[in-house]
Image 1: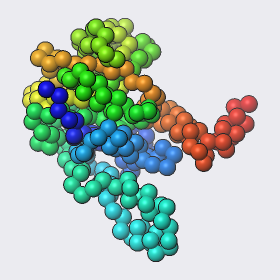
Image 2: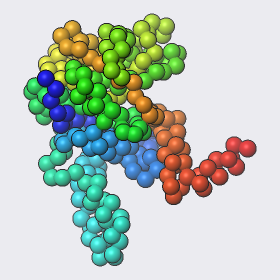
Image 3: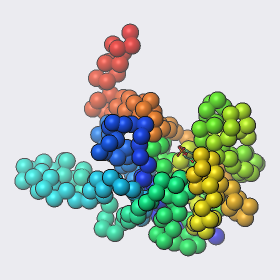
Image 4: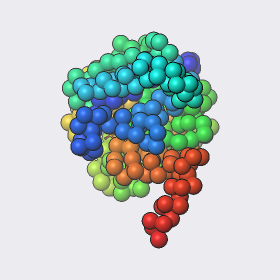
Length: 291
Ligand code: G1P
């Protein structure tokens, strides 16, 4: 039976070592792409897909993420007193309603699977939940998670978003094995986290969006370690695949891996160029620079 996807888990506990020194005091999820922090793109994508409750799995030094999704009383009072209704409305429209977000902490960096497991008491047994890895900033119409919810409503089972990568890059990701085509998606027959170079079963990688049955939490709770000595989400998905179908939905849109400096810069370029206020001037600047 297909049930509504109401909840999403967003892991934000990573240390962001690739961005030091920027991430010494500021979480990597709070680095800015054009005019909003990286984390906000995932939250907007989740809300567009109909998500009603977001669970953030945080860690030490991540409290500004909580502040970002709360009222900033002094700022709002000052904007109101100065009659700056535009920015004020923008801030208020983006704010989750009371009770729509929860926070839990991953106390040790034991891997993505462990981070998701830390939210086990906050998902509803028997219901699917979404996972969004916020480093992956995705642009699509509709957004990636909305595309997946559409597939979930048609096909049921578990749904993962996939994308083709350069085969030489496959060892950096979770890779799926493709089965039969099915109504805009395909059956997944296997998965492997970070395959050794040259051994990947396809070049379709898991690009950071999942709709999973809540029973995955029991599998994650076994705390089995895999690639890199970490508790991997992919390994528990592979176990769940023995009992439940998984469908891969090729994402129609663009993905920027903001967990890498290059991806982060590309996201700023692409979204800056698409911005109605900034696009023309930025385009002129880039043309001049690359002459
Ligand atoms: C994680 C997942 C991997 C996925 C990737 C997408 O890896 O474990 O399956 O392909 O995110 O970014 P990480 O980037 O944390 O090494």
